[in-house]
Image: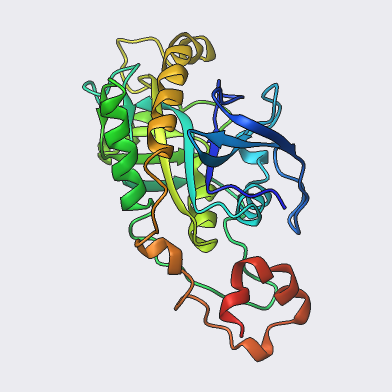
Length: 287
């Protein structure tokens, strides 16, 4: 069985991860369907890493169509304990400029209708989500960004919108009034599912534009995003390499036991089919 310790989910513009050795391409199926694409699994400076292009190679999957449950479940099945998720983002603050990076510590969910849990069908669980990103992984990611020479903001609130259209000016100005820092389309439901799967999860937000809140600037377009993206992606790859090298120790964060007191359904009433489907996620708590 192929295994990996770290998962990297590549966002817009990042469809491969250079520097991997001993590479295997792994195609998986899960109880929640197929992931976005096959995984590229290999060693990065001695650490086993599984890379997944979030939107599929060729960028063919909309944010709202992403098979996030399958993606996270598949990473769990590979043995992944840490997920570094890359996303492009628009900025709501003048000082967070295109070309900068931001490692968010908070989320606002503005998505619509995305399935954001592995649970249901006879089993109920309520994870703690006050801190939606792993603090330990965030710290390593931020430090690595500094070491890579990037301009990085080590905290901030990420609004996750439904898309695929960009924000209206009124929506963008609303998010500014809330004190949010950046906006993207993909960190949810990934962050919630990773917590349910007891995997550490953090986002590296690559700022590409100022969204649509400034009336004196042209509103965000795909062209605006892509102009900045290539520079951001190359920097992100350096940061990933630096981060991976610091994730070899034993985890001591709360992510690893997120389900310990979250499952409220008595084991004896959970349907056998649901237990089987979620064995990878809840098995250790059903004994």
